[in-house]
Image 1 (cartoon, rainbow, N blue to C red):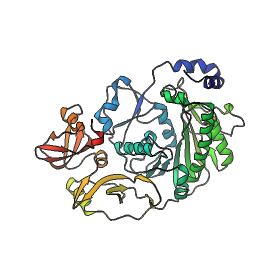
Image 2: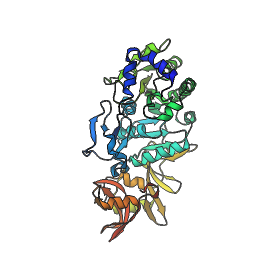
Image 3: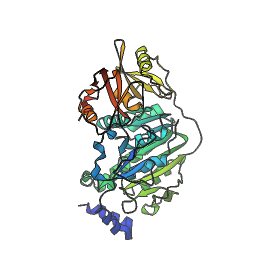
Image 4: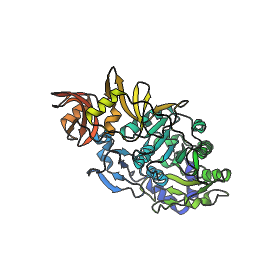
Length: 441
């Protein structure tokens, strides 16, 4: 049962479309996934896929009975299960390889990994999450989706101002919100809703937007998004922001499959709100979403100062040579007991709460190197590999943590249907299993 006060307000918002909205809630949800271009350039034909998501590259609807989250290729990072409407904000952000980008409210990682897929490993992606538990989920999804150029942070958004003012070419604010657009998907969104929640969220969103404005360089692009229908959190949030930030304006972006913003829903709207976007479940095949594209006046370069590179350990050099592994442009970073490969733009990490500073390569241990699971997922190939069919008993055994037969010796990249899923270490008869214990089935 939807909250009565919500329904009254939505009836006012939608008018003649109100009944169509209610009818849409009785239809099955449109579920979707997004392929990962970091994993392969040739996406396999999956029998459960349907039509493409019209507003998102690599997005496809799928048959929910198929349960693609249980397939080995999900664990391999071939795709991310993501609500279709949630793919729109990153498409509007238009990330490019080589840019310096911030996802300010990033967990669980759907939009972050979508940004990373468009950056193709080039540039720096800083993704931040205030909640420590959710930040760990974000870091795990960064790893699973083979993202090599992400710095994962755990901060209150405002903490980043002293480190990154004027640093970013683009900033995404997928703001915490009252979740009205998720009522059909999440029962908790209904039980947690109240008019006071809407007011509280709008105040919090205003503070996050103020921080985002400081992080963005002059000339940069800011995309703000929510998964709610509340005008106070959507057109109202953008209008209030523009009136206190005259150096920003709404940028008109072509997105013909999306519905326009509704300036008439708020008092004294700022110019251009009709060029923001709404996604309605009775208009688009997805849940409720809102997005606005903003441009900061001026044209100045990023203020970010890269840190000095560290030396590359001999243990890694020997390991990489033995397996013919080549890394992209970047620099080594020691983080705890692990060695990471970071983008050249990575700044000094002093004073930051860091979960991951790039691609985890592994650990140097008494003259030898032990590779990380993240490196296996990132690799497309190396000198020693063993491939099995995705539905083979060998892959099932590997995911369970068992040894699997192989004539390989030494470290070996295990692949399922040509897609890497982890490491094994062979003795000529079997591969000792190095699939992480926390991921085993």
